Length: 155
Image (cartoon, rainbow, N blue to C red; front, side):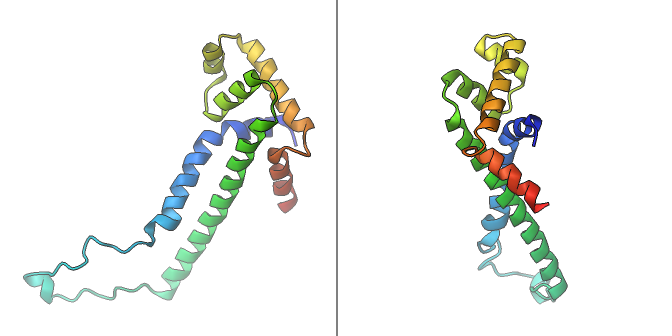
């Protein structure tokens, strides 16, 4: 496991958390009833014409189950990744390093982080390497390392 993988996981946090929210909406937000047409009677030709079967075929249901299963697996993987990234910020002792980590989580570029903190990019890269080495050496406590190891063992 290399440091670039850890860095990418921290930097990808900002879109993963939005994807977790989207997948939650897709998986559990659609369980309500369709209230748009409830209790509305139809008039004219629409009331006389056949509507077809309201149910879905078994093949459609199986395909939907496979899609939902894949979405759920992706949801759980992203949920574990985001919680690991959130947990590991507590492993950093220095507030300055936590600020850099937090900016990385928000998806800021290194140039933008350097401008925000008023430091040179080279100094920022050194601080970022310090963060990554700290997380890598604290492999017993780091949730990111545990997640990456579990992914490696699963493959």
